[in-house]
Image 1 (cartoon, one colour):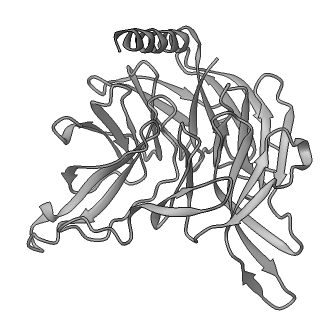
Image 2 (image 1 turned 135 degrees about the vertical axis):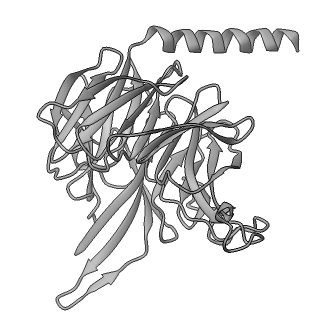
Image 3 (image 1 turned 30 degrees about the vertical axis):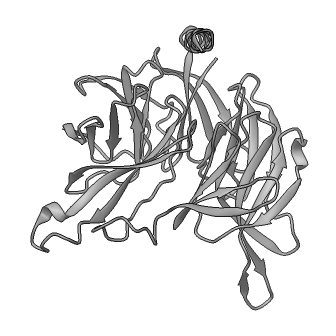
Length: 358
């Protein structure tokens, strides 16, 4: 047992050393068709690429080696893979792959080994006189399928899914009205964390809008979630609660952390790599103590931001989306320590932030 512990210690030490020695980059998109590679510690945009057929890039999924960015584009009807060294398009999957369909996608992710892309498709059949809403599906594409990728396999899935998350084991999780776990080989799925029909004592049905991935530097999905304490009087404002819903991508364990009343953060949150604190933003940036759950600090932001991210060393927290700036704050005291303005000041809108190390 002692030998195993020593080996694990050495392994994690080498892994952390590898991350520390690599340069950290932030990947973001902006309207109408730009993808930016930012040297975040140098506070500068290092590369700019044009995304084909794009009006407003949304989701971005990184290959495990950080070399390829897969971007939702073409009015969310295509997934494009862009090589971050050359800017070449190396992958394309058009999701309208059946006759007379118009397919919309919001959630997709990649397998841990980088060989497959999982896409949640919402297809509609076009008739001469009407639209017909079809059954949503999971389409699985091979990443080496080139520029005319077609599904290797597909399966029916429930409606109202908006985020796919791949765990370290290769299991695929989907967040919608409930949290599902999906077998990507058979399409079999199960509810593993109920949301719309949860049975949390004395809590109302929850509300969350989680489109933003923030697990790149901590291995844990988190999102703000709101609900009401039904055991408290209606005139007691403390009954309106905010929590963090988390999913550890190593252990695949869910947790609900209630930390404040007066909901003020809506979309995204991020845990510090040490998992003792978390951060969330919207019109304010807040620091959340997870060991004794409460809001430890709060500052006003100069405008609304959609996504919150963090550096691998846990020293900097980033807020982005909505406009053309990424604001940078110290994680200890939330002092503002920098910013990055995208060239030409394009609107990021609801595009996501991804963190890589190369």
